Image (cartoon, rainbow, N blue to C red; front, top):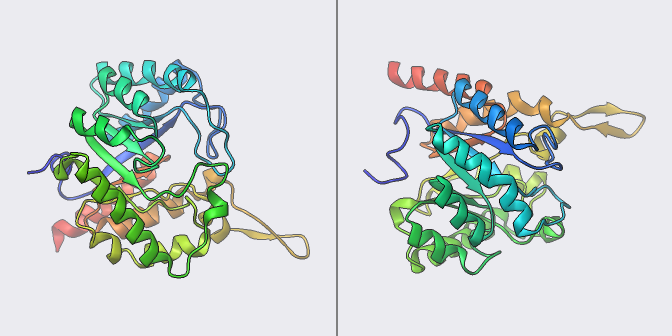
Length: 284
């Protein structure tokens, strides 16, 4: 059984709990910015049913500025090390090879790279050598400019083709095919229409031949979906924490498609939804 398919119960996707050790995350900026708060929150997510904790030290929300590598390292390494020492399976959310290397040395076993290796030419060689699970996402640019790049004639075909290029680059660099997970990158260089097209066209991403991560949690397109009228001609988006039910609904809908994992902020809601799906599958 491969490294990516054999790490979680076969009846459901792996649940990846998000811990942003940042002051400016779109969903919970600043809540878990200190090392102690991040560790405590991560352990709470594990108690709620998270299989993996995804630790990030640089915000990737639209418009976010980059941080220095030393800042990113200072944010994530103590959290990764403490969680690994506690027996928690840890992923590091980074686009930098240096951060990936240090985090793996501290105990991370997954590298979640939203750039799919495009942001740092050394990333693919690093993860290939480390022989860890590598999540490669569809990406067109850093947070400052990514929404300016949300232009497609055929979103599903173009995004699938670009993600296939990242798959091929990872394999060429020596990443073990059994360690590679793909992520279509909901919300990254995509508007709401593009996001829904990707979800509706999921078959195109399954056809790429690798396990898939669904990462829709609390994203802006769900805020648009759940918006309410505000003023004569405006809309008030549902705030991030109010998007967890919609997130859990998508997790449940896609769980039956054999996902590798779901990346979520509210672990309990999604874990409950996946338990329902697993029970239904078992009874079928």
